[in-house]
Length: 386
Image (cartoon, rainbow, N blue to C red):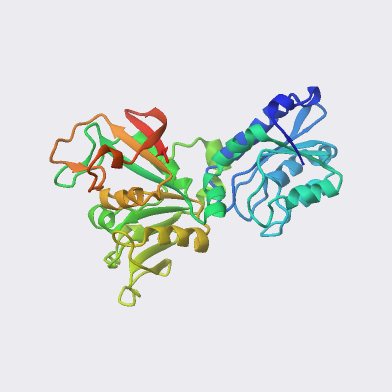
């Protein structure tokens, strides 16, 4: 494989970045393909795009196969731009590298190498052995990884990419002293949260939130704000609810909690409990968990979600205590904070329960990724600075 930065492209390759960007845009247009990565593919022949594809969901056509079907006979001798190295193994579908070989593709240009040990260069080797020229546009490597942060992290570290979502007032409060919190933020912000849920393999909350708010934690498709085209493109992903996870050390979740009502599976992580006394639905699993720094072993929770349930992206939607624990233990990759133009007062509930800091040198530092107006609110995304 030849690695090429944009400034080393030849005259006949000057349009390659545009087609690779198109492939990345196709990959990013799918809200989720769990447990698989989001992938886009563009086929170029005779000075035009002859096929486009994106991976909708596990078990369905991969991006390359979708593009090949669209191109038909025009795929022969074309150049394929793929956001991720074509797979070389048989899972629910066949190897994409074989499909490209059989179609007579002449050149394959990728943005990033697949880190999965079942692929990891094997697709490249097989295509090159068949006579296909393979290039990597190195300037797009990090862009491709940002589309699938959880996939790359899960394979590299055995942990999912964790987003922690919170909502607060201008004075950093989440609810009135009496517990009232619906709704601090606007409908537009709540719609944005639905997109975060839909993009996640699992949504994690704590027993405190379950007892106080009785949330469903399910994706509400009607609140996504998607166009008909977006709903169709994401129909496969939206047909399955993310895994719903409760951190409940003493197994106090009521049998009739709303979180059990939606379709899909629920996991309750409990400390030294077998759950034999609970009358839970068939879609509920109880996992015994050891003690961590404060409460349950949260790192074990994430490792279990990654290894046993193939969770790549996890959304934490919890109260100040559990969210604070995830952040304090260095388990959060990204904060997503919605700030509403309200003042709730000094006796209202604070955003995070993180105590014991005695100097600014002990503060937890973050880097702001972006700030965006969402309806009447502001959304801030930040990542740890370490």
